[in-house]
Length: 345
Image 1 (cartoon, helix red, strand yellow):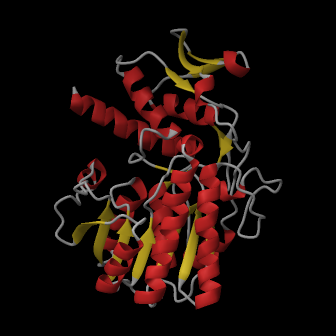
Image 2 (cartoon, helix red, strand yellow; image 1 turned 45 degrees about the vertical axis):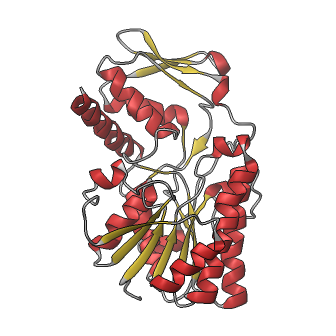
């Protein structure tokens, strides 16, 4: 294992970037986190994690689409590890602007890989990839050997980045690794993601500040894990002498309906489900009030019915071990949003 003395984390203001910064600082590393030019790098996540004023975390502006800027930064910093989380992270947005997703997730990764190859070849590059690279696979669960068949523009953009990691590792002997992340959620998730949309809506409903929440495909089944477990595995990847690809997942799938049920239960509310298709509703037991409706506006043009991962390799090599089940994850998220809502009142 190679201890990380200096780490560069792109997208430090996001969920994964902020949690990576916290993990690396705990392990004694100096952390440089990038943010988009024109933004000051502050984020509510860094504030909640107690990192906003931490002198060991330096924030710098970087546009990964600027190849020259990537080269300059890598040449200057010479980090032991580069953990790349910046980019376009929402599958739904990729359907609206496919080219922007390819540029933000695919071409930006190529810029950073080239900067490492030419200017910081001892740096271990770890990519935050995605289970969306599998598309709608026939095989379940999915592991590192599962054929890749990305379907959404987001999946294609992440597939380009993932393939580049393997290509540059093979062609130029770079220490480069790809973390194939299945759904990893936390109280620091963005509200554009369905899990955090649900946890905040449940908190507001429980406090009498909202009546219901609208969701898309309730039948889509995903592998939901707790994000801090996943970033810990990414740091372990960066500490390894050689690069490799790892699926990070719990091995258990749950539907969006299941997550909604667990989130309401975390606030002491029981949902009963009635109807099917677009007419399905989740009704609060005892009060007989509709709390969840289906809105076709939230359906994706392409949506894999089942993504569930086999993380046996990560368990063996990295000591990866999911710490929360679905109920525990939903509880953490709902309790955090209840606290935020109460504090805001």
